[in-house]
Amino acid sequence: MASEIAKQALLGEDVVVVNAEKAYVSGDAKSIYRDRRALFSIKNKGNMTKGPFHYKRPDKYVRKVIRGMLPYKTERGRKAFERVKVYIGVPEAELKKRDIPLPKPGRPKKKLRRKVTVASICKHLGGSW
View: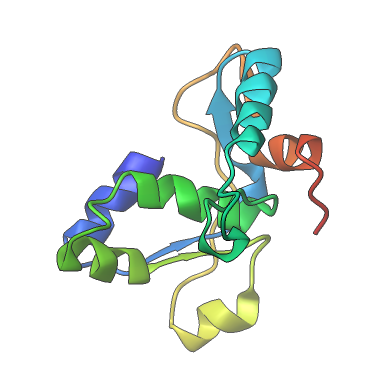
């Protein structure tokens, strides 16, 4: 999902992601939790305001994953990242303001045997939203 969103943003389209907490991450739950928890050991001990930042909210988590798929250090990548909006749930007022139709419930294209939702990853990391 993140790579497709990054491609569309690089092509100049505005991308709105809703229900970020329901997105799936493929893989074994234990290994995903272990890998994400290990990222918390990476810190800037000199100045905490300069990052790296580890997000616990699903919208910020998904947005950072999308940023990882963009050439963020170039102007083209930064502008593409500004075109990406990620929301928890469905913000009907925001979608109406942008003249975007409300999403219809659908199924994932591919059945995943081992999967974890972004919400469960963020809850495991200590997030509450």
